[in-house]
Image (cartoon, rainbow, N blue to C red; front, side, top):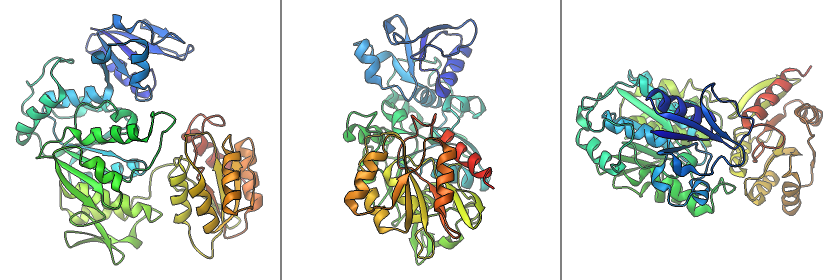
Length: 469
């Protein structure tokens, strides 16, 4: 086939390698006119990269590219559009790989996905971890042991609907290898046109996000629903009981519904994480900071419990895993001031959660807020700052003015400019802090404009803090 790879980033590269290895004719299409592509590979780069796509047999979009942008320039081409995530599920159905756990939500996906994978590994299972968390799903395929029935689909592209494949895999699920699992973190960008559902799907807390990408909040919720929409009665949907949107999203399919933070899923009772009357561990034993991570822990326990009831394995992970990079990550203590990197938090909701993680009457916070716009409102964040133990707010990025206005409205005035570089930001934070304080980089905004992405922002923060005398 003639295959167009639309967007040549991490997932685009994985898709290009995958379809190229199958012998297809690859063309890389990317809006970056300076994008470097492999030697000898056809490319269409720059402003017209989405023009005349009807000449291809298959269009593989990167998650960050809205399907509507493709269709706007190429009406009627919808049936040709797929994604690396869709192709992964297609091949899993073809090879009878059924042991898949998918995790979505607004925040906590990476932490929960990693916890689930580690719990299953600790109980002796073979686990493949990927998706939005870093390893594109298609890169996992070569290492996954195929199930017993591998003849359901033999071509890399089939006209059969994914729900037909789902019915086929449901019938053959008992033949699949039971000790091998795939655990995927999946964003709304990946889910928006998903054509299949995993055996176990998990929906964490959901709040408005990515309004700069989705047309409205309803489209964002609908994208999340696709993880559950094609589940069958033998499948499992796990959702956060305290969040009505999470509950709504999990109801999209025919699967059995299991809440967490509520029986019969894992819940917090008297300072302990418990599931089906079994004590897993005390919340005080968790290495993860913040009460919001009690939710992530309960979600992971509930998902892992559907596979294994190995309490010791599950407990060992919860009491040893301290978190992922740029998620409330302790960087260093200097002159009695502790510095924390929460650059992954790019919404007001995550900034509020980060502030709450350090709510203590004897601790004051120097909060670094601001960045680029994601279409969010800052009123609740400002109210949380006013009600919390924030000594000073340092404002950065193009959203500094909007956050300042929200702080003024909330009656909080102890703010100032953070700076235009990370060196200036950290220097101002260090100057504002006193012994016993916490400097918290949890901006409540995206990073673009000042930084390449949240990782770049977090890495610069950590590098700059490491250089402080």
